[in-house]
Length: 251
Image (cartoon, helix red, strand yellow):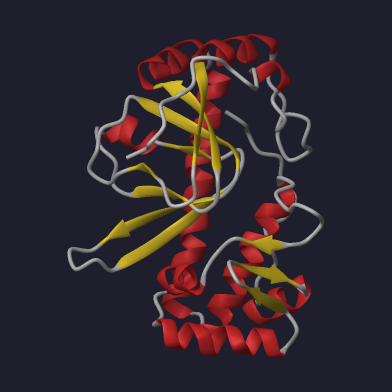
């Protein structure tokens, strides 16, 4: 569980949210912004490796990622882990538990993660009084399904090299859209174990596969992350056209 309680104050009121000016997010209507500002109760900052939500648990909160990286995953009884997807700023987490009663997956911080905190019991007020925001929630859920479809295609049909290239290109483009890279370096804060747990490969097979991408000068592997050097090369290897240009909702 999280080790830090949500803060009572708001360091980033919705009116001055640092994500709102980004071109990737659509703007709110004035009444929507007023509601979201009331809906949000504060921020929560957690360290890398902290479990934010636990599979099988009930949570009184929803969260929107304000900064940092995280990932969704499921654990098998013997400890094997399958990473389902990654979360970046603007992504909503905890909606599943709000609608089904309990979480069907866990969420862990991949880096220091700042989250906007929302009270779950206000969710139905949103559905009842703000159909535009309700549509946004539906859009976000559909977008998550679309990304999971592509991830399933990777695990089921792409070769190991194609899987790795797709994953790194996917994370790279998601990071670019929300200005996640610091100091101009396109570094994704994952380990080879994260890659293995996402692609369904052994750590040995993962290492050999990533070495091929390194030898093609598509990536550089660092101590705690991967630097993308040639996005076009990754896209070509994966046979993937990329995310495409599309404005998305921000909750």
